[in-house]
Length: 116
Image 1 (tube, one colour):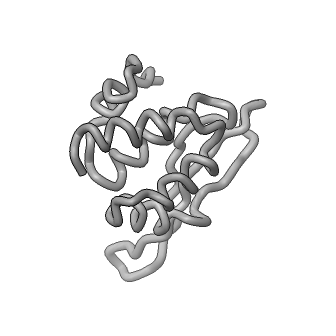
Image 2 (cartoon, one colour; image 1 turned 180 degrees about the horizontal axis):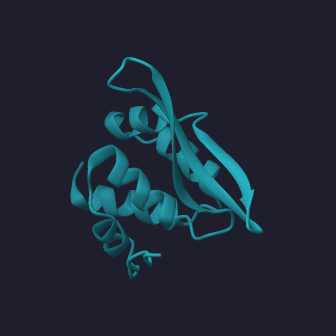
Image 3 (tube, rainbow, N blue to C red; image 1 turned 90 degrees about the horizontal axis):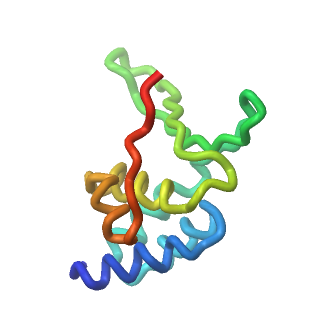
């Protein structure tokens, strides 16, 4: 995918209202690598209310060193957050792109998550 095409894709994704809409747009992408990566994530997101926040998590199952399946849960964003958080996570998780670079492509400023 050319940089101009990637930039247009990221900007169009940022116009979506929520993660499900952005994921559907990714699945419909002309770039087969992007579409297949998005399709592989279908059904792997969970919404949980924690400490009064509606948080969206990516839930996947992997085999551990002992050959047993383990569930892995990764926080993505809160329900209602700007979709750029999901878009940046997607390209980092699937294509190892730096989240900061995805934000820059969208014309946004990346803020490093605060450590607790």
